[in-house]
Length: 89
Image (cartoon, rainbow, N blue to C red; front, side, top):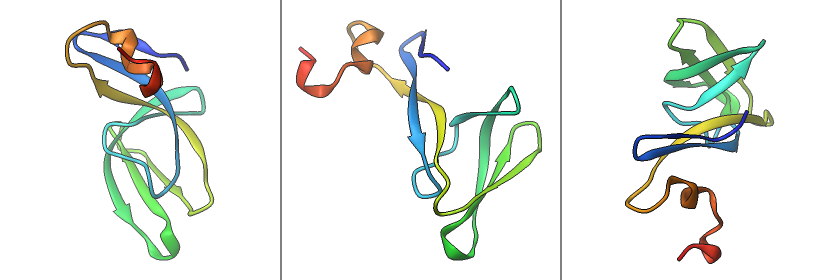
């Protein structure tokens, strides 16, 4: 998955877990890109994700996945949102 510039926003790749997954994250499952539309906390630190297609995915506390996350860009070039903070000007 690669970052794509949108009007005023950037999709950037992030590693997610059951503690860091957010609504709107896009996860590739079985070659399909699925957007998280709802989350349910489960026992043991697990979460059940509901995708916009209606499909469900349960991730456990130790699960690590790559996702695309929408990041808003305030002025300037959208590519600057991907640069580490210490290199931004």
